[in-house]
Structure formats: structure tokens, C-alpha cells
Image 1 (cartoon, one colour):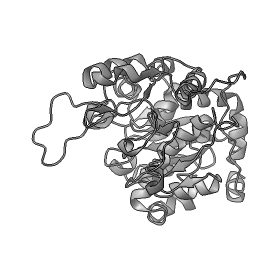
Image 2: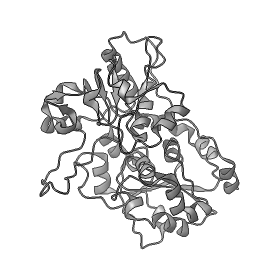
Image 3: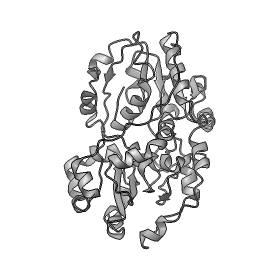
Image 4: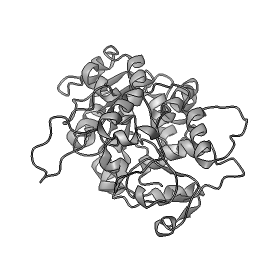
Length: 379
């Protein structure tokens, strides 16, 4: 069940564990979601078999995969539910007419409202990245405890597996030999860096000498869906003309993270992943409500060096202290390197199939193909 591009990318990390098995046929469906813009285009480009939602909810399947919550109760299958980002750190927001917000808002994705329907626990297996999430689940939705499986994080494992290929990613992105790559990451909504600081990208590009630095912007797919590709490029036209790298939402965002020399970001998943794999990271002030304690985003909020938009950037980019990558990685996953094995085992258990005896491996992310414009700008 692909709800959005973000959830679709997470599912694409996981289905490879079983789709090569001749006993398994994988089909996709696009669940209703306000941010499902371009999901159909991505699946078409991948050559995936896509069933209409109205048909998918009438059929029965041996296993359902999802990385978001909408429409889960309509699916007729044992369900494996994953997070679509770096753990589960966001608090549930109160609606405009919900009255005063509680002092301790529930953690989104581990709450009974999203994990149950009519008194029934929806997932047959709830994939968690860390034991901390088990404790949150125990408080918020104890009925779902029996479905919890701590598997780690398949995305961070692929990032780690990709680090030895960092020179390949940099060459493919058109980076000059002596250039440094600055990645500006933004989550979606008014708390994201793109929403809170619309002048951040122009300011970064104006302050960094073009002969030494290249700048890439990684915008959450929901930003593209909410505003449209034409509008975003219109807002960033001067930056694009000056050489900004702007991967689209269907492109793999992890290659720029691996290639980066510096990351400037908010408390979205990209920033957490970048810090976890050791990219020097500057973090913008935390939103309200603050990230849930014990999560990588919470560690960033507590310990990361802050980005002062009123000071020149180049001296700040030399600051690498303040963030301990091992601590962020430890908060992100309790099973580093094992997500593929544990998720694969869980999927075969739910499919009620004997798992094939084949070596376990985590593949690196694909090397992007350089465009002529990138090569020309890199000189």
C-alpha cells in the first residue's frame, strides 16, 4: 500500500527481500492520501503492477505492506506496518477545535488511534527501529505489544553500506575534485526549514563561494505535492540559475546525503540519517511540539550546533563538534546491519512460506546518473 512518495521509497527498500522468490507475486496499490502526487508515475517508471484501490480492498492477499496509516482497516491481509522515516518521533498535533493540548502528546504512529480500528489491532507485525519504541507502544497502545518486532532501520543500513561508494556518488553528481557539497534538508509543513526560513537557500548560496561549494536541496516529497513542481522551481529560480542541485521527489535522496560534506537541516528524517552516518550537521531550532524523548531527532535538538542565520556560514561549516554520530545511530536503530535479515524473516513468517537459504545482504543505494548540466556546472 503506497500512500505517498516517502512511504513508497521505504516499501521499495523492503520488497526486494521477497520479490525475487518465484513463489511470490508483488502488486502495488495507491491508498487515498492528500500527498500521493506522482506515486503512480514512480510506480509506472519502475514497471510495477498496480491494482486500483477499489479492486485491492476487495481482494485477499497473503501479506500486506504499508509505511503509512490511511485505509489500513480496508485491506484483507496480515499486515506488516513500517515507519516511513527515521523512527517515530513526531507528536500528534491537536486540531483547531480540540481544546487545550495535553502536556504529553502521543507519539504519532504508536498510538491506538492509528494502530486499531473498531477494537481490532490492525498490524499483524509492527516493525520498530528500537526498544524505546516498544516502551512508547506499551504506554500508548498495549494491545499492539504482541505484534511488535524490533528490526532496526533498513534505510540507515543502506546508507552505511553506501559509504564506501562515496566517491562514485560525488562524481555522478558532477562534483569538482576540490569542491565541498552542502546539503540543505527540509521536512514538510510550517516547521520545516523550507517553510520557516524561505530565504535560507538563497542566503546559503550567497554566502558560500561557488568555486569551493556546491549546494543541494533535499525537499520532502510532501512539499512538492503541496505546492507543485512548477511553483517550487519558480521560488528557487535564482538559486537554480546559480547552480543549485535540486533532486526531484522521485529521485533517491540518499546519494546526496552520502556525498555531502556538510548538512544543514531541520528535525526531519534526512537530518537524522545524515548525523547517524557521520555527516557534519547543523540543525535549525526544534519545532513545537518537540520531538519525542529518546529519538534521534530529540538528540539533535539537545546537542547539535545551532545554525545562526545572522552570521556568515563558512566559519560555521568548520564546526563538526556537538553531535555524536554513534549516539544518533544508537537512538535510531538497535539492530544496525540486521534490518534486511529480520524484516525478511518476518515477511516469510507472515507469508507462511519457508525462507530460502540464501546469503543476507544490504545493497548500497544506486549511483545517480549525472546530467549534462551538472557536469558543465562542476567545470
